[in-house]
Image (cartoon, rainbow over all chains, first blue to last red; front, side, top):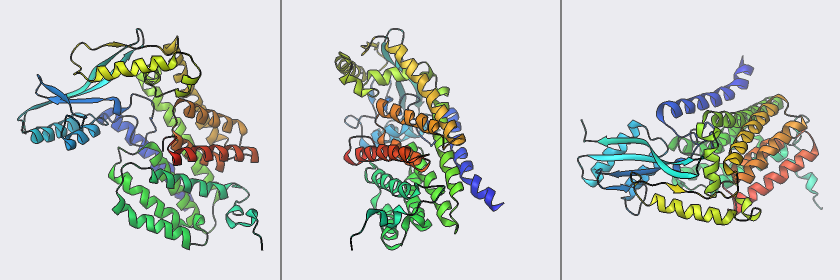
Length: 134
Length: 292
C-alpha cells in the first residue's frame, strides 16, 4: 500500500493541477499559458491583450502606466490573464474608486489575424459596465 | 597528492540503473538556482531564510544532493512564489516543484529507489509534452495556424530566419510599426492593418509548423514514457527541444527538459548530447541570451 501511494501520489497531484487548469480555462477564462496546464504557445499570449477603461465616450488604455495610475495599471495587467466577469467586476470597482467615478466601462481586446487576407484587427473578448456597488 | 576529477565523490554516486544521476542532481540544482536569480518578481525577505537554509544544507551536509532536507528546502523556496502567484508563474515553475517532490521521495527512503525516480521523471516528461500537445489541439487559433502566423509576423517565432530569408527583416519591421500604430488608438474605430508576409505562403507554413509541433510533442511524450531507454525516444525529445529553441529561445524550460533527458539517457553518447544541450541553455539563461 505504501509503495502504491509513493508511486502514484505525484502523478495524481500533477493530473489534478492540470485538470484544475483546464477547468479554469473553460469556466473562468484563464489563459492556457498559466496555471500549470502546459498550454504555453497554444494561443495568443495574455500580454498581447489590451484593457481599456473609461466612460464610453472617453476611453484610455488601463494597462499603460504612462496614462493610468500605477496600481490600476498593475491590476489591469493581471486582469489580462483571467478576464472573467468576476475579475472584471473587481477591477472595475477598484478603478472606479481610484478615479472617483460612479460608473466605469471596462473592455478587454485581443489581436485578431485574418489569415485569408493578412489583415490584423482587434476583437472584444470581455467587457463590463460597472454602475456602482449594488 | 594530486586529485583526479574522477575521484570527486559526486562523480561516483550514479547507480547501475541511473548511471547519470550524479550529473542530473548538480545540473538540476544549477538551473533552479539560475531560474531564481533571474526571477523578476522578487520577495527577498520572505525567501531569505529559505535561501540561507539551502546554502547551509549545500555546504554542511556531506552529500547534499542525496539528502531530502536539501531538496525540501528548495521546494519550500519554490512554493512561496507558487502560493503567492499560482496563476502567474511559468509552467516550468510547476515542473521544478514536481521534480523536487520526486527527489524528496527518492532521497527520503533509506534504500534509494531508482525505478521510482525514473518512473516519476518519465511521467513528468510525458505529461509536460502530452499536455502541451493537447492544449494546442484544443486551441482553435493554434490548429488553424493564425497564432503561429501572428507570432511569426511579430518577430516572436522564427527569429533566426532573419539571417536566412531575404526580406524577412524588412517585413517584420513594417509589421511591428503598423501594429504599434494600431495599438495607440481605441479599438472601436475602424482599425484594420495589412501585414506583410515575411515569406510567401506564410499562412500555409504556419499551419504546417503548428501541426508538426503537435505531432512531435505528442509522440515524444508517449515514447519517453513507454520506452525511455530507446534511442528513438530521445531523438523525438531532441527534435522537440531543437524545434522549441528554433522557434523561441525558452532556454530555462529547455534546460529542465535536457536535465530529464540526461537522467534517462540510454548511452554515453546521449549523456553527452543532453549535457551539451543543458550547458548551452543554462549559459544562455545565466547571460540573459535566452529566456529564464
